[in-house]
Image (cartoon, rainbow, N blue to C red; front, side, top):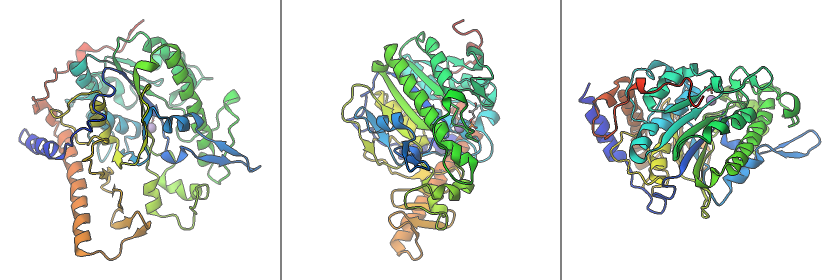
Length: 439
Ligand code: GP9
Ligand code: MN
């Protein structure tokens, strides 16, 4: 009910952190292009697969170069926070700075009816951004076509806008190279500044071998064929993203854009990790445990700003819930009036507490999986704690469960319909029609 909103407002007020004045506004008025790296985990960055001749093959050479580029602000302790809504949960988190549902996809269950105050609407009101999503799959998947209207997306280019056939697509839609290539014609006609999301999809379970000319990257040699193919589909994604960057440069859009590249969630599930372990430096199937599973939930997060020269690899621990407050500050937008549950990742006051949807959590010091508390420095379970340390851990647990509880109250209670201090225009879904766009 309406007075539940008071709890949310109090949480947001006490949890918000100030911008980092060095970073505030450095991407002001630039186009924003989210590049969705389907199922790509952070461990693939800088990873080299050794083939049976002992030859090393860099899996994602282009993304590796971006990760270390002086124009990129990269994060190597960034975690996904999705549950069963998978890609759509990552969209919920990035567009709203609140979590998906503990059970089931928010997009499907609440996307058509809830009130949102999401990134497309915020950027339209604050800075006149036009917004668009590009994704070569059917628009009803994850109820996107309805949910995007409530998020305030002006355009949604789904499979209807692409030349999709049996040779260039698979069950989840158009493959990434034709996807990026065919998206440019629409991207070039968008009113600038624009806020766009390019949802790639080829690097998707079960990572079946790329056909024809896309073959060639070696398969890993484990007894799990989905692991074996994962590096080849990740390599294909990498090639597709490099081609996209070339299109952006050729079309003149690159220089005046902020390109955010992010992994949406894990690619290899926990149950399969023991077979992956032997491919990872210093890890083995025999010793693999839930501490290792938790470390594998890191996903790439890079803010690439052409023209910048002091980009670094930032070790701040954060999650997808933190991306929107971070983005708004980079664009020079004060976000104190929005009900966002995350913290700007560049802020000097960021608490570095990463809540997972199931209540587990990660900080620079601890990995907490159920009742197991691991000390990250020793990768071992903390058996005895001092009174003081136990208090610290209890406080962390409390902060994590509060963030999740506030998120659930906000979404399940559809509380944003009562929140009138955002200054945002009310969304009327009849204002959006994703058919016959730019035809
Ligand atoms: C389909 C794609 C599926 O459009 O989003 O990705 P998933 O949600 O399965 O990761
Ligand atoms: Mn996904």
